[in-house]
Image (cartoon, rainbow, N blue to C red; front, side, top):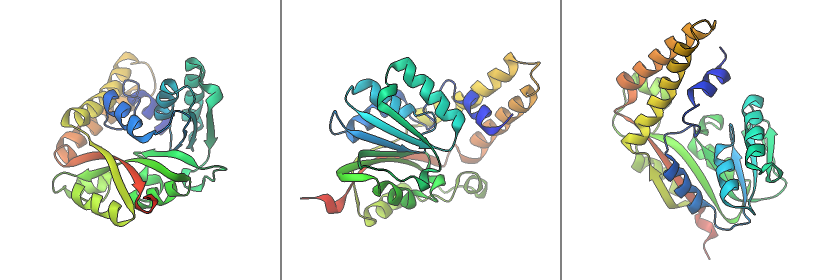
Length: 247
C-alpha cells in the first residue's frame, strides 16, 4: 500500500489532517477571513478540506489550493462538485514552495505542511510572497509542551517550545491576531481516529493483500504516539498579520 492510500484510509474519519476539531477549524477561518469576497490560498492543501469549508460558508469567496498529490487533488475536485463550489475553486498540482501566484490573496493557509518548506519561518516567508496588503496568514505547526525524547524529535522534528515559537514568529515581523493550541482531547482524538480507521479497514478487508501491512502500521504508529510523543507534542495554529502593515 502506498503512502497516499494509507493516508486516505487513516483520515477517513478525520479529514482535517491536523489535531483540530470542527469548532476550532471554523473559528480559525472566521478570524482569518476578513471579507466575504476574499481570495484564499492553501499551500499544501491536500484534499482542500480547509478551502472547501471556507467556500461552503462564504458564497462570494474564491479559493486556490496547491499540492503535489494528484490523488488528493482529485478528491478535492470531487468534493467541490458535491458541494457545488467547483467554479470558485482552482487547484494546482505542483510543489507548494515553487508556486507562483498571479494575484495576491487575503488569506494564505498552510497548516501542518511546514515540512514542505523546511520549517515554520520558511513557510511564513513563502506565504508572504502571495499575501495582499493587510492580509492574514493562517499557519499550523508543532511545538514541544515538555522536553521531548530523542525518539520523538527524530519522528516529528526539532520543534521549540510554544513561547520560543512565538518569539521567533514575532521577531520575523509577524503579529499574532488569533491563535489556538490544540487541546489534549483534539490531540488524542486525531491519533485515535487515524490509527483506529486504518486498523478497522484492515480488519474489514482481511483478504486484501495490504491488510496485514495496514494493521501492522496502525499498531506501530499507535505505540509510537503513546510511548514516544503523546506527553510532549503540542500543536498551535496562528492567525498572523505583518507588523509592518500597521497604519
